[in-house]
Length: 116
Image 1 (spheres, helix red, strand yellow):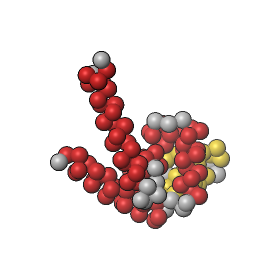
Image 2 (spheres, one colour; image 1 turned 90 degrees about the vertical axis):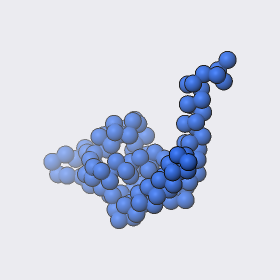
Image 3 (tube, helix red, strand yellow; image 1 turned 90 degrees about the horizontal axis):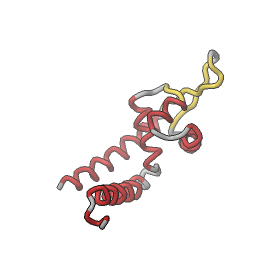
Image 4 (cartoon, one colour; image 1 turned 120 degrees about the vertical axis):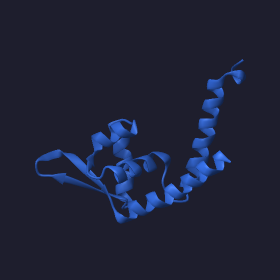
């Protein structure tokens, strides 16, 4: 029976963690995929959409939607360089950096609660 299988319990735990994380991140106004993008950009400012999609394990189309939403909210800036009109280079705004700090605090609390 699947209830006795470790994989089932791991997937169930991951699903519950995902739901709890999404709920808490809503306080900051970001989803889990958006948070992933913001944290990658914190570590690697100036990377392209394509590189960001690979690092976040999503398709270019999905990344485009995430970036568009974050850009609309003023959390990142997309810049084109004259040498490569096809690529956009992404950096966080002050508001984006603040969102990351707030979300990091929320996720630290979740991690601490789990470890108790």
